[in-house]
Length: 498
Ligand SMILES: Cc1cc2nc3c(=O)[nH]c(=O)nc-3n(C[C@H](O)[C@H](O)[C@H](O)COP(=O)(O)OP(=O)(O)OC[C@H]3O[C@@H](n4cnc5c(N)ncnc54)[C@H](O)[C@@H]3O)c2cc1C
Image (spheres, rainbow, N blue to C red):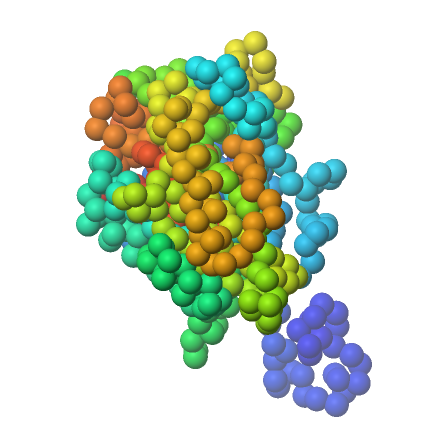
């Protein structure tokens, strides 16, 4: 080491000028750059207390809550992630997007897995069904790309849930706290908000988002990027306790013996299999992969894979007349929640480059129906030799009625705001990315894949977190609700492992 702490001998002039034998040379600094990934060979030798599959909203929230509640208590936690480490934070916090950084496997950095979609019970229900659903495979899941819009589910929808309104509120508070949800980041475009409130939409409000608007507190050493992603949860958990993480490791099956989960079969990218043992297994691989893993494991009781839902969408482009409002409104986001009378929410959002144009995005309630589902295609296997899955989905008559009313609602809102509509259209269902419900929580296996706490019916120690848990679609962006329910599942696991 030289006197700057770098490798090499002290320079000759240093040795002659200073009494190096009297004052010892400082020891080398310990490297703070560590390889954060754990080889599957090592994980195979560990008996985990909790093994979490997937690192998106569901997996990240479970890990964070376990770490926050347990601290460094000696329990062993492992994370299994099929995707690669692509981005260290939400893409909106990175100045260079696109293209992505070099820290990815060539050729395509974003790996999406496609689930072709077929009508479930009405062959000609709607064109939007032709678009496949897609699943991003990456550390952090979809949270590295998401839009951070975080409203709570309406009490109208929560009324039928197997979780009480009071309990949901408590978990919403916890999720909002960790995700730094606030209503102040977006300004309101006051003139639009006032007009909406005055003319038929009294509940209109600024949009809540998971963007940290507080500067680092004095004395805080770590900085967290403002826009929330589960990378922040992974980092926070690592500060509280050690845990193992394998990336590019795909969970393909879970094993249960005598009604109890015992482990997960995982494959690396060379398709080498590993068997990982755990007392509790949490599948948080999202709406499509979670039921696919369960069905490929022969865990197909009750409603696993069924009740696939999402939101219907009607989007419009609105224009502000410069004679009516001469300035450019800039960045704003306002929303009208779903109410007793309106089974849809509307988001109005303007970005500076849009000038006087802004989006109106309507999200409608979609019925949870048994026939809408994720199903295996045993004759078609993937590169790991496992049967692929498809989505079977149709809108019901009630869903089509919601879409019709949502389109009317958008026109009424435009009239109230005194803006013109340029384009009104329906994005294909698979593009909306609000898929949910395939292992929904409930009290009976005939209508739900998991019990009210997220444990798969009839298999103790096997849990689900993430979008597949959500019992009914409601009309709000799902991330906050996914986080709240997944934190609640983590609390239940903590109780079971006492
Ligand atoms: C562009 C975009 C914008 C969005 N904007 C919003 C928004 O503003 N507000 C909102 O509420 N929602 C939004 N969403 C939706 C939201 O991101 C998702 O609902 C949420 O992330 C789903 O969380 P999840 O944990 O269920 O799934 P994911 O986030 O998809 O995570 C699943 C994880 O499992 C991993 N995985 C999958 N299969 C396996 C396997 N076999 N083995 C191991 N690992 C596996 C994946 O790599 C991933 O890490 C948006 C989504 C997108 C794509």
